[in-house]
Amino acid sequence: MAVDVLLGLQWGDEGKGKIVDVLAPKYQVVARFQGGPNAGHTLEFDGFKHVLHQIPSGIFRQEVQNIIGNGVVLDPIIFKKEIDGLAHFNLDLRKNLEISKKASIILPTHRLLDAAYEKAKGDAKIGSTLKGIGPTYTDKISRQGLRVGDMISPDFSAKYNALVDRHKAILDVYKFEYDLAAAEKEFFEAVAFMKEFHLVDSEYSVNHAITAGKTILAEGAQGSLLDVDFGSYPFVTSSNTITAGACTGLGVAPKNIGEVFGIFKAYATRVGSGPFPTELEDEVGERMRVEGREFGSTTGRPRRCGWIDLPALKYAMMINGVTQLIMMKADVLNIFDEIQVCTAYEMPDGTITDQIPFEITDIKVKPVYETLKGWACSLEGMRDFNELPVALADYIKFLEKHLNLPINFISTGPDREACVLRGSLA
Ligand code: GDP
Ligand code: IMO
Ligand code: MG
Image 1 (cartoon, rainbow, N blue to C red):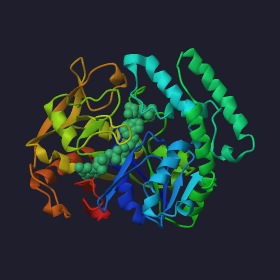
Image 2: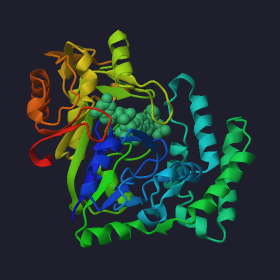
Image 3: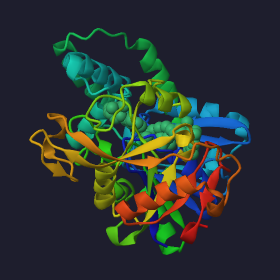
Image 4: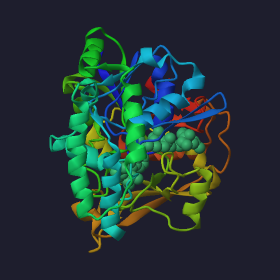
């Protein structure tokens, strides 16, 4: 079967974890294709809330084969903590989790480099999660990184020391002070732990699954507007977060991509620095943050909040070839009598555009808004599209008209069960 892809269309934290978990029973394989512990994917069910960082969100469905693909950057220390955190769920993780030997390894010094680079940037900092993502991808691209498969090589320590020596030389240039001993001990313990898992050439696993006619879901991390090529560079992450990233991050040929599920919030959030045209730095934004519990799943930082941005969404849909739209957190807008939708940007010279200008990081564009009526009521317990309040149905219709694609999945709460499905997804 073709590989379906599920990814975020905004700046991350759209609710990917919840949706992968909800869709997982329909899939035999769930595979993460990029990013690393900068991600925080939240799943809620049976009164439990669990945040996953590197492990695919299909993990709670015992019959699903979960794969961490070659495009991922993996921190062994965080991996061990994640596995320990899953112990009480009685999952057979050594059986239903595979890790690509070609995935890159995050070393403790990658985290130090992340911190040194951010410190040196001062006010121009990216707002990185400081998990070592940028430096690890840098080493991958400059062909000096370490990969999961290297852990089983007899000269792993020598390879490790050679790379760490280079990192130390850079840290010295930045006059960055550090104490590595404790983290190194933890790192080598975690490496020994990770070696007990199923380390594979996961491109074969994925392609054998395709040939065998299995259903496969590729799980993205971050969001399309944080993509290293198409996001608001340099305020981006260091990987391709878009559909094409699933091809390179898993070894899937483009012809084998099936549905592309694009997830977006009924409003917008961003964590870290960078342009955010519809940001609300006022009491309305604060109400959204509180109602949506918009605090980072990985860093706990308050997320910046604002109205939905259609030029940005249309851009993300274009780059990804989205075939199914999923709208998250509709319930968070229950508290508003009126809802604003950004349909275009006004440029500093007064011209109107519905495209994202190259200069977005240097200029301030003004959102052009249309105001819609809020539904101002709870959505609790609603499972059928026809039960939704008229104003919410009108909001959905308005978005569909602009985005030119039906929204067949509306999420109305953090729990697995809080979903309204229709059309081809019902
Ligand atoms: P991800 O990184 O895309 O997986 O998203 P996060 O887990 O970082 O952030 C999404 C947050 O919204 C989590 O706290 C979820 O539990 C929560 N969430 C998901 N869907 C909904 C929803 O429909 N309504 C509400 N209120 N919260 C939701
Ligand atoms: P999930 O998968 C939201 C942001 C950081 C920062 C920028 C670069 O949970 O949606 P990095 O650590 O990659 O160097 O940070 O990207 N960022 C995310 N924002 N959700 C994420 O992941 C993110 N991963 C990175 O805040 O602005
Ligand atoms: Mg998240």
